[in-house]
Amino acid sequence: RAKSLGEGRTWFSDDALRAELTEQADLEAALSDALARGEFELHYQPVVDLATRDVTGFEALIRWNRPRCGTVRPDLFIPAAERSDLICDIGRWVLHEAGRQLVAWRAEGTVGEHVRVAVNLSGRHLARPTLVADVVAALTATGVPPQALVVEATETTVLDGDEVLANLRALRALGICVSLDDYGTGYTSIEHFRTLPLDTLKIDRSFLSSTQAQDEALLGLMVHAAHTFGLKVVAEGVERPEQVELLRSLGCDLGQGFLFSRPVPAAAVAELADLLRAAA
Ligand code: C2E
Ligand code: MG
Ligand code: MG
Ligand code: MG
Image 1 (cartoon, helix red, strand yellow):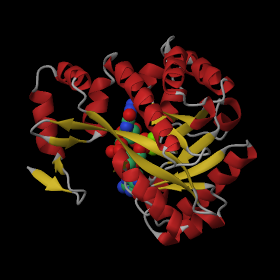
Image 2: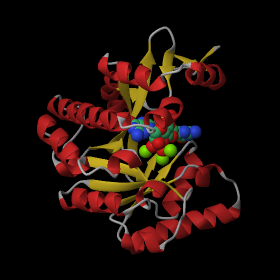
Image 3: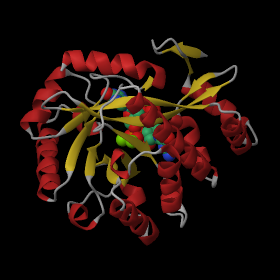
Image 4: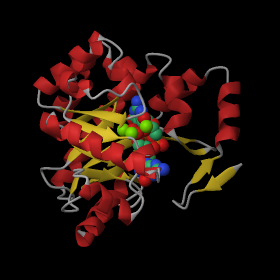
């Protein structure tokens, strides 16, 4: 059963697709074929400076355009890909594709020199001895300066072992920005801000969707603690204008969410960039 999300695309209902994908004996083979056939696509969601409304970057979010099925969301296939080294192949593809796209946008004047692209890398890939070489290869092949790349890692991933920490330190030493994704959903400790190799904190959208006064207070504490350790703060899941006011009053630097834009195909970014500039 398909449902429309109003993006002119068909999304399969989670249940139907999940059932189909688990029935499929070899989802890994299907994903590997999908990679070889070019069925993956990146959509991009702007990250906005809450004070100036400037777009400071875009997060690249993967979609699988599955023939005869429509667009498959990452939640439905990334976990399966993460059970094997296929996730590292996907990660390398994402790094190259996002890098190539940013350079193209820069060349055509769609985005300014300060705009960055953020990619999500899985823990399995971040722990690999070849991780830094993979990232450097993508930067070299596409011509993206290290300062224009953001690598997003989740809290659980970052705390998963010394290999990940060493790799993230090496990325930062190259000038690449490291962002802690979905902050607040894992083993949250403020002590981590001091010890982990991080530039940015992305506060999970569950803190914004809550209407409880305690969560508002928690948000303020997180922003303050992050700033104390020199981190920038991005709030995820900004959907309503009054959330922008709240976040600004708490000192939060950046925001990302449906209020500014849903993730859109690369071809829609030029128009989106114009729209956001006009609204700024
Ligand atoms: P994430 O990295 O935390 O990405 C943010 C997710 O929140 C995206 O879902 C985005 O569409 C959604 N989102 C953004 N703004 C709002 C909002 O205002 N309200 C609500 N309700 N949701 C919002 P998406 O694209 O389905 O991605 C889900 C997750 O899949 C990502 O979470 C990330 O963990 C993973 N993922 C996506 N692309 C990749 C990839 O290329 N590689 C890997 N390893 N994981 C990926
Ligand atoms: Mg992310
Ligand atoms: Mg997130
Ligand atoms: Mg997430």
